[in-house]
Length: 279
Image 1 (cartoon, rainbow, N blue to C red):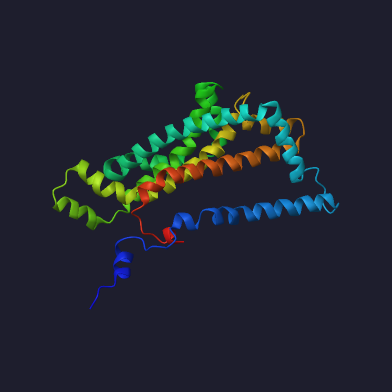
Image 2: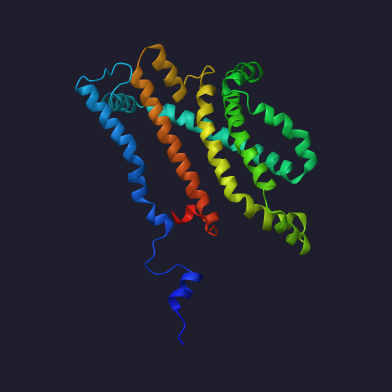
């Protein structure tokens, strides 16, 4: 009886002609994700143009795009985007490093967990704006205080993500590694890291999102450049179009950096046969 090569190919590798999850969710996923904001923007534009709604406090998209075009034409927009992006990048790097190291230590060592985790669980509930006066007193109003404030926002979701992922690793897998006499380093590299990496990527995405949120509070601390500065300027001079335009830029930058993070980490998750990978 001849072997069913189709079945063998399907079990050992991709079947010819099958769509990969990445290709299936590429352009169609992008268009579907853009459908809701485009429909809402068009509806609001029509409502303001027809006189159904007053666009004074919530400007229509055409006025927002005119504001963005004006800021881009003068070069001011790109200066503020660059300043904010650099702050987020520096704060994200610092918060990721601290959150990963402390989360890994707390997850691996019960002593470290009992020592640090209760305090950190309490501090995570402190609002971002509450740190501002303290950071100004400690570090002044210059870049150090801004970057550290962003790092604080990034730290907590990554710490909690790493800690929770390590604690949720199946005990039987760890016991198998110990049965094979793996060294602590080999146990971490060959068992713990692959087991926690999917949750770690989710924690990174959460930390990145909070980094973009915390940068606004950071740029309230006497900044003369940055998107947060543009928000304050728009509020002080009564320019709602500028405020909404900056919010839109924040949303686009947040989505772009999240997409980049997912794209960078995707090759490390090719082995994962999850529900999300098939939909």
